[in-house]
Length: 301
Image (tube, rainbow, N blue to C red):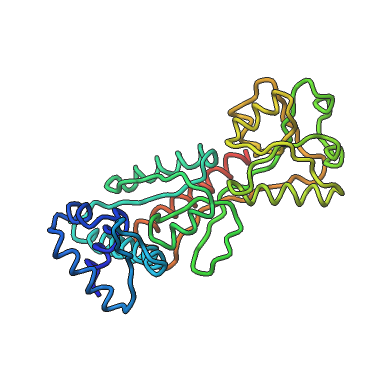
């Protein structure tokens, strides 16, 4: 089996039409059909069901498709890494990041990296934590910025930011008069929260905090992005625990108050695959660490 066989298979699997797949591959249909038959013979399994209604993937074909895509993605990435050393391939760094997080810090890091590595193309992909981890293993991104913890021995991490959670509530709410809010008083309040599939770490932290304070939160609405969540708070739908950085983006009609107990934090940082940390990734991580030190130094003044 060669990589070209996988590319042929992927094209047919995505088009579910041999004629269209052949056109996409810039080849004739009969040779493509022969190559797929040869692949099935080599694997001793049917990848496609062919009948009068057309072409469809078998259960084995569905499973094979996912692995074939991963293999091609890794092969392409391996070739790009090697080609960076002979000048035939533009140097590229693909970064995954949490949407609505790291905004200022990430832009600073990228600006610094462009100055130190002007020949590297930067590609940004907004993704949640779990898809970023999958993309790192698939070779689709080089560095991710995710919520911690990351419990994967193959991945290296660097803590970048500890984001405190604060309570956002309408300016007219009686609790807005308090400088800090005890968690226990939220037991009787309707609560808004991010959907768990969007921000599982944040969701789980909030639920745990409420349980530790002795109550089950009365969640009346899930919403994202943060701007929508805060707009619903402003409209009086409920109260919400959000990242402190949200305050800089939306403060009309609402106030933000710290929690009276010890401040809860969301840890966020950089993550990369230790088996693929080439020169470009290492250069960027160096910039990340320098940016953290610079930020801490200036915050301490």
